[in-house]
Image (cartoon, rainbow, N blue to C red; front, top):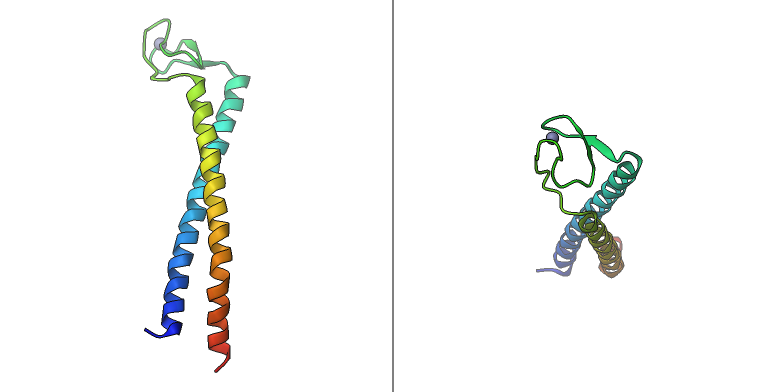
Length: 118
Ligand SMILES: [Zn+2]
């Protein structure tokens, strides 16, 4: 394997890694944003209609007080926990992607020199 082919292969693998990391980071921040929006909405309207009987039920209710339908909600702390996890994951993957870009700068430069020195 020539130096050139090796460098191209390394760059392709690196670019794939970086793009998937950036995609993952984007998904994390998107989930975080959706959670925050949901929380703000939840604060502005505390009552939602029950999807079984239609009675107004508190957003944090686990079961409907009038028909007994279970909403399968835990509590708000799990949302806060997942928001924190999403934030940490998003920041971590972004940092990793930036690190990979810095690491890949050198082989990219080498490759550029290989192609231009002919
Ligand atoms: Zn109900």
